[in-house]
Image 1 (spheres, rainbow, N blue to C red):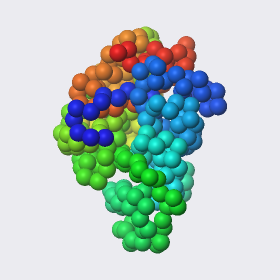
Image 2: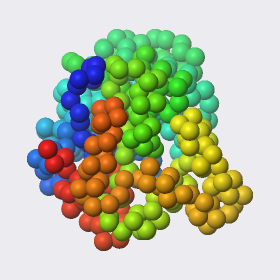
Image 3: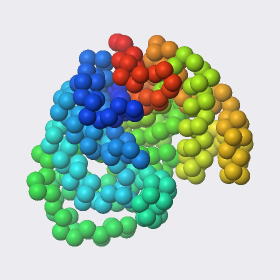
Length: 324
C-alpha cells in the first residue's frame, strides 16, 4: 500500500448474494484468472467480515483479501486484533484489515451499543491495533477504551496493513495519518479527486462500487433508487454527499423520506444521481465505467454486484472481470 504508481487493483465483494457461501468455492477459485486482484468482505446483516475471507484464503491463494469493514464498536479491540492475526496467518502478506465505525442502525439498533465519539474511537482502535499486531503487550488508557495487559500469542510475523473507512475530511485525514489506506463508499468517478485531494498521494484509496449489470436501465435505476434512499438518508452519508456537492440534488428526497413519504422520496431521485452512483449497463459498459474510477485516482474499486432480475451472480462475476 505504497505511493502513487502502485498497481491499479480490481476487487470483488464476497460473499456473493443469492448463492450459499459453501457453494462459492469454484467461483472464488477462478477470480484471479478473470483479472481480479482482490476480494473484500462487508459486514452489515448477512455474513460476518472474516469467515468468507478465511474460506477465500484457501480457495484463491493469489488474491489479496480485505475487510471493508469490520466495525470498531461491535467488535472489541482485542477481538479485532485476534481476528486480524488469524487472517494474517491464513493469508500471509495478502490481508488488509479495514475497520470503521459502521452506522447507528448496526451499532445501536441491532447491537444495543452507543455510537459516540466515532473519530476518537477509530483513532484509538488504529493505535491499539498497530501496537498489538506488532506483538507488543498493550496496557493503555485510550480516550474511548482501556486495555490492560493484552498481547497476541502469537503475533503475526508480518503485521497486516490497516485501512480506515472515511467519508469526510476529518476521518479521511485520520486515515491518511494513521492507517495505510482509506476506504470510502457511495461515490462517482468524478468524486474521487475530491477525496484524493484530502487523503494525499500516499494512502491506498479503496471504494466499494455498486454494479447492477443489466442493460435494462429502468430496472437498474429502480433498484438504485431504493439503495440510494436507504443509504443517503443516513446522516453521515447525507453529510458526505453535501460535502461532495450533491446536497441540493438529494435534499428533496431526504425531506420526503424524513416525512415518511417513501414512494415520493424514491421518485425525487433524479436519473442523473442514480447514474452517477450506480454502475449499470452491459458488461462492457460496466467495465468501462469502473475503469473511470482508476482514471480519476482510485487505486482499488471493489465491485458489489447488485442482484437484478435475470442476472446470474456467477455469470456477472465472469462478465465483470478485468478485460486487460
